[in-house]
Length: 288
Image (tube, rainbow, N blue to C red):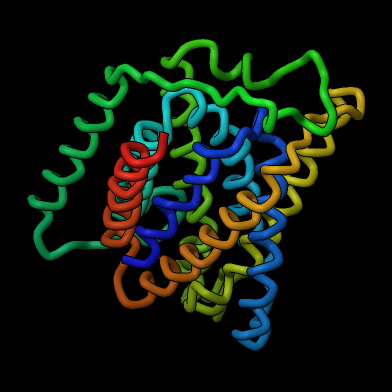
């Protein structure tokens, strides 16, 4: 429940604060994620660092650079619902059928499980036909610290359809981001695996996951700065919301990974992704 509330709320600041093309906002968010994960790592008494888990963080950061554009294009609620649906479907299928080298998981009532997945797929397709009516913020308080004529936001958000497709791609990348951790756990019992006797406690991999996020986001931001001729769009008002967003996401991730130790990912994936979509939709109605 905590993961659902935190994940569903962590992008609410994007609705109220001008973030431009989102590159600066995503870097601030990822920096906050990394700092909070270091604190969590100290609390867990610094478990063994697994570099392979960083791959998931890289995939997550790759998807995260497109979050602000699709929220600006189609709105918070609709965007999170679409990305959550694609995350749910890929995450559920990979856990249920053992895709990408992870162990397949069984459920006590497979028919109900398949029906739920089918309804999710249907709802995700329906979301693509929902018309978004989103207005961008324009005020004297949204002037960037550094400006340039090029706007990545205008490229990403020409049409709401593009925003929907972007949200779906982000959802797939989010689903892929958890697979490295599941892969490590699945191969920890195989004698011929390099991950033999690796920890099956998912919280031990959060810091490595977040390190991958911060490194990838920093690389992307550096490339962005170079592409903008060292004149990126920096919004001072986006710093505090970015830090808050990173805090909520990291706490939500700790809650989700902890839940995976008591439930299986085939159960937590639908609960977390569908639940956070509902929370985001409610926020989308309340926050204009």
